[in-house]
Length: 446
Image (cartoon, helix red, strand yellow):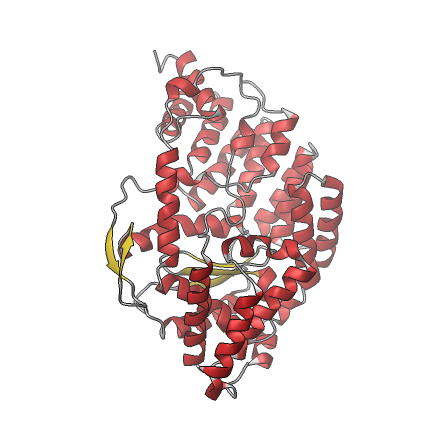
């Protein structure tokens, strides 16, 4: 079996979060129609029904949560966030939606919502907040996007684009096959935020207004919203890379802060004495905030790694692991950093550490699986890729690499079935050419 040890391919692989491309997440058919805006009551053109919003959410959100290294393992913290979110959602325009709330392990500053109501906030933004009212404002804002169907509208546009871009012919992509070298680089193309909606400024203003209404309706001081805006603006000035993804998906400017300040003083002036619940927030987030320095180092390490500055990335990640040796995200990113320096055994070592700490999260399994293929430990690769597929089912690239592991184990008929299944979903690229060529060599294609 050809080896996969091309150095450039390894380096390119590290610059992508290990997920599948957006095209294969699209439903087979999208129907447009009119629906009533739950907020304004006006008719609006929608590409999906409410049930389709929920179904899309259930398919896509697990991949983004995994791209952000999974929900935090502190159950009490997640229960706290979820309960606040549910109290706000109950006062929203769409209380019937299956809302759910969690913090995820990513170190950058962001919060996001999927169209069915799955909402996440990163550790990066959570450690930047000062009180529970700011947290309520953040969650209320994301609920506002779901209620105004901004998320569904933007997701729908993305799906239509994916449909237009997909469907290339294998007859053209099969030409020029050059062996297995370089196949690893395509294992996943979704980085942080790739599945997220990108809102307009009008969307943001409406979500701010809805978030303010929901949080004050739940008894929070409107200063929570102005405080949130100030946190984001200050972060942009001090650490612009921390909020880069958030500002690309949620346009931010001084006018949003000024609008929130004016609205709090006028429309919600009678609620200025409502509580901020600072002490309760500080108590519930104490364990997480003790890792703030480590979280910042993880983010710096991620940025350095994305730019190919491996020594700098390793230094930052070593600092993070010295402060938080059991941090799943730090371990997975360190595994990638080692992989980028062709230290495959070290990469597998950090991947195994991460898996022991958080076996229910998928990313470490795929790191170990890819390392095992490179080390020709095909049985081990197969087991970890199978586990990745169980945790995040439906990724065609997992199917392809399972085929490679089976091929290495000399289980050709099973490998052929995996390659055929892969080609049923993906019709272009190096992996498709490899699968097509293998099937032709083995006599499955004439």
